[in-house]
Each structure stands twice: as C-alpha cells, then as structure tokens.
Amino acid sequence: MGYIELNVLNNNESPLAMGIDLGTTNSLAAVWKEGRPVVIKPDGAPSGSVPSVIHLPERGEAVVGHKAREQAIVDPRHTIFSIKRLMGRGLADVQADLTAFPFPVEEDANGVLRVQAHGREYTPEQLSSLILMRVHDLACRSMGGGEITRAVITVPAYFDDTQRQATRDAARLAGLDVMRIINEPTAASLAYGLDQSATGKIAVYDLGGGTFDISILSIEEGVFRVLSTNGDTHLGGDDFDAALVQLVLERLDQRLSREELADPALQRAARLAAEKCKHELSAKPEADLHLVLPDSGINVRRNVTREEFEALVQPLVQRTLDACRRALSDAGLEPREVSEVVLVGGSTRMPVVRKAVEDFFGRLPHTELNPDEVVALGAAVQAHILTGGSRDLLLMDVTPLSLGLETMGGAVAKVIARNSTIPCQATEGFTTYVDNQTGLDFNIVQGERELASDCRSLGRFKLSGIPPLPAGMARVAVRFHVDADGLLKVTAREESTGATASITVQPKHGLTDEQVETMLADSLTYAREDFEAGRAAGLVTELGTMIRATERNLPHVADDLDPEARADIRDALAEAKAAAETHDAKRLQAARDALEQATLPLAALLMDQVAKKALAGKSLTDV
Ligand code: ADP
Ligand code: MG
Image (tube, rainbow, N blue to C red; front, side, top):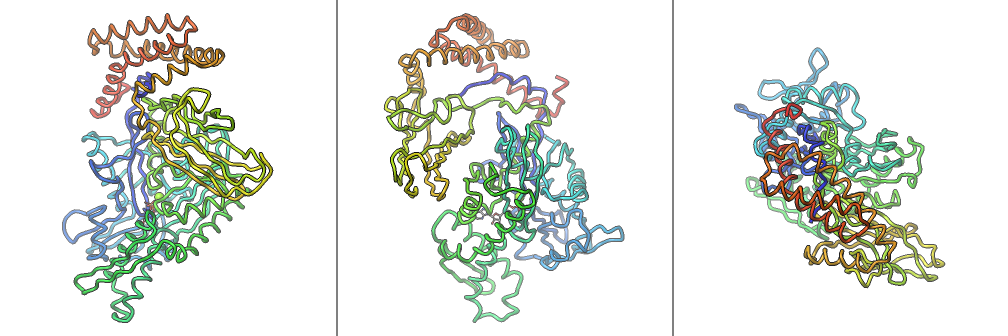
C-alpha cells in the first residue's frame, strides 16, 4: 500500500537528468525515478558500476569496464586505470602515481599529460570521457534507449579548479551537458537527505579503491559548506588487497625467482584473487585466497580468517583515523560535535572499518545505502533538483503503520509515524529503569494503538553490556531505519561503552492490506477521544492537500482518462470535500482512501507523461 502525493505535475516540467559518480576505481550513474534516486543497472546485473579501466587495443575501439579490467592481466601495458589521478595535473604532481602505472605518461609543451599507447597519445580528459560515455551509454540503454544528456558529475572535495575543469571537459567530450560539478561528500549527504535537517556537522568518511577522503561539512538551511578535508591519496582498498597478496606470494617464495614473482601478470592475478577473498571476508568469518595461473602452472590456496585479515590491515585503518583526527582539528571540532557520520566507498563494507569509524566518532555511521552507490545517488538527487523537480517525493512509498518500541508498563513509544515516506529513519533515546541494569530488552511493535499488547510485535532483541549505573543514567540511542524496500533495521547503542545490538525485520511481513486496514480502523475505534480528534485534524489537512492537488492536476490529463475513471474521481472529490467539513475520523479516513484509490489512474497517466516526454527527448517546458 502506498500513498500517492499528487504533486506530479509540478515535476512534469522537469526533464530527466543523470547523476554520475566518476570514480578512480569504479564509476556509475543514477537517476531520479518514482520519487527517489536509483542506480541504473542493466537487467539482472547485480550492480550498475563500471570499473574505471580502459583497454586500448592495437586496432579497433577502446574497451571500457569489466572487459578492460580483465585485460590488465594479459595486456597491462595498454590497460589504463586510475586516470582520475591524472585529471588536471602536471607531471610534477603525479610522480608517485607514475611509478605504479605500467603504461607510460608524458607531458606536452603546454603541460598537459598524455598517456602513450601503440604510438598514439591520449589526454586524461579523453580517457575519462571514454569512461563517461560507457557509463552514460549503459545507463541510457538500461532505461530503454532514451537519451539523457544532462548530467551532474561528482568530484572529490579537494579537487582544485583545474581538476574540476578537466572533469567538465571530459564530460563535454563524452557529449554530456554538465549541469553542475558537485563534491562527492556533499552528494553522499544529499543521498541521505541530510540537507533537510536544520543544522549540524557531518563527517563523510570515503574509503574507495585507491584513495581515502575524510570531509567535514556543515549544513545550514540546506546549504553545505566544506569545513575541512583530509585523507590520503594513496590509501584504499588496493592496500588491503596488497596485504593479502603478500600472504599468497609468501607461498611462492621458494618456488619462484625474484623476477618471476615480479611478473606483472602474476601480480595482477594475485591482486584479483586477493580482492575476491577480501570481499568474501566482509560477509563471512573466513575465506579462501585462491591463485591460479594455468600458463605458469601456479595453483595456490590459502585459508584466511577475518581475524587474521583484520590484524593484518589494522595499520591501514589507523592511518584513516589519523586523517580523521587532522580533519576534525582543522575544523576546530571534537569527534562528538559531529552529528552525522556517513560512510562512502566500497571499502567501508569491511566490518573492521565500520567498527573503527563508529568507535572513533562515538556514533553509528550511516550505512543504510550501498556505500559504493551513495555518491551517484546523491548526484541524481542534485540533478533532479536542478531540473526543477521538488525534493518532495513524486510518488511515495510510506510506512503503512507506525513503528515503535514497547516501553516500561507496556505502552508504545512511536519512533516512526505512520505514513512516513520511505526510506526514513529516526532515533530515540532510552534509558534503564532499575539501578545497575546491564541489559535492555526491546520489543519492536507496529500499529496505532497505545498499548504494545494491541499492536503487532515485529521482533525482539536484547542490548547487553550496559555499564551498571543508577536507573535512568544509561543513555541508549535506538535508531529505526526503513530502507527503500520497506525493510526495517533497528539498532540500539549504549553511548558510553559503544555496545550495540541490532535486528532487521520486514515491517509489512505477514500483514495483508486488509489487516493493516483493520488495525487502523481499530485504532480509530478504540483510541482516546483526544487522539481521535488529533487524527481527524490530521486527516482534514491531508485531505485538503489531496483535494487541491487533484483539482490542479486533473485538467492536464482529463482527456486521456476514460469517463468511468473521471466519474470516480469526481465522486471521490465530492465526498472528500463533504468529509473535510466533519470531524468524523472514520469518514475522513474512508474519504481519503477512496480519493487515493480513485486518483491512481490519474497518477499513472501523469507519470507516463513525464516518462514519455523525457524519452522523446523533448523539452517538457514545451508541453
Ligand atoms: P572509488 O571511489 O575509488 O572509485 P569504490 O567506492 O567503488 O571506489 O570502492 C572500490 C573498492 O571497494 C575496491 O577496493 C573494492 O575491493 C572495495 N570493495 C567493494 N566491495 C567490497 C566488499 N564487499 N568488501 C570489501 N571491500 C569491497
Ligand atoms: Mg568514490
């Protein structure tokens, strides 16, 4: 069940634009669709991300993405990676990178870098444009062939003007119309909707493939400001891979000569094997590190436990925290003055990293969105806003019933109100009620009734490890997060020790729409009178909005609606207006639901129009 906000026509005039995360390791695109940003993936693909790797064959077209990445083993000399590091830079800036590149780079008379391959020369802008073209092309094709040329592209917060200009030029070469270049940490914050919170300080911790960036932002009235940035341009997932490569190569020490060990093909294969093992270790307590090179008769397997891996990479994690300390000090802040922490970059999927960041800032970081997608998602939000779309969602999915926790005495503390648009989140503070209590039991409930026993229990979990304190002294933050799929994750964290516990539940699971209706009706029947009056007032407001939106939007599509649908809408409108004059919550509720139902075809038509016009590549302002 969903609640449809009929503001669609307000957004009707906005053509679609794309958000693109042009990453050092991976790049991907996202668009605004049905009221939220989504990453564009080819059908059935697990992810939409394209490795930022280009293979330049002797003859024929350049290959970009996964296929190019495979070429790194067989043809490292012509397989270009990390091109982002060269954007807008001169030879002197990138000495350290060059030693790691198996392909030659030179500087021309104007100080522009050029990558050499097969006697040809390519500027970083040209190579980046190949990545952008690939991402753009894949995205357009996945969306059904329409052409979207407007884009918002992200860059690291520390990129200077030249680097930003180079990124713009790359986009132009790729045939894109750049609406805006925005900072990656800002994009990540937008994806989490942090622009909508009043004021605060945000730490964005971005650990990617080869780089680490920590940015401290301030948000005020929806405007982000970068207070400080820090990081390490040579610290990222690759270094975590390298730690594992050492492990597997130790096995070959005896058998292979030094030259053989240094062979680029062996090195690349070992790196790929290490990365695969690392990914598995993010999900499992142990994994195999398996290196096979049939041509050289190499086949080694080594089991690695997560514990062993975490010990191995501890120094790397510490280095990221050192940078966090410097960034905070530059911003003149203490860790606890940061109100939100956002995790970005594929490498923050590693539990050891998450834990370290949580401990450092003393709060739960945002991890609800995929860390490798969050920048592209935020770019799509920005693109949507820039094309005149409102941040108010077009077509919203909402929580059908309120979500809360049972409190002392069996009452319910509502944490997320019914009809909150998802994804959404809220945090509530709880405490202990007897002295020296070291554990808290949480019962998560769904429903509108005042007593937990009248609501539906979705799950229980226990937080232990609370230090023994007088009653009411422990501070436990409980965060509810409902993701875009309606999955609820509840996390409790005791502030002084950092002890956490969490549970994931599907709030709608097992409840049919009728049950939801019954539970709603029950709550209206049984609730106290003041509650009833409050609900009625809320419904009158809601109905008012819906009536206005319907009346505004109806003329635009009236001709395309069949007469029956039109009549339904007219009837529902009439009843809605009549109900709005009463304080009868039940009647209001019914009128609201009926209007929602009747306007479904209207909403569908509006959505259709938006999509068709956009796909036809027409300017919607002309409609
Ligand atoms: P960038 O911003 O540098 O382009 P990404 O944010 O895409 O990079 O991060 C890429 C890095 O994330 C790679 O080093 C990759 O191995 C790592 N990574 C991706 N998924 C996981 C995982 N499940 N566990 C650990 N590391 C991961
Ligand atoms: Mg990135």
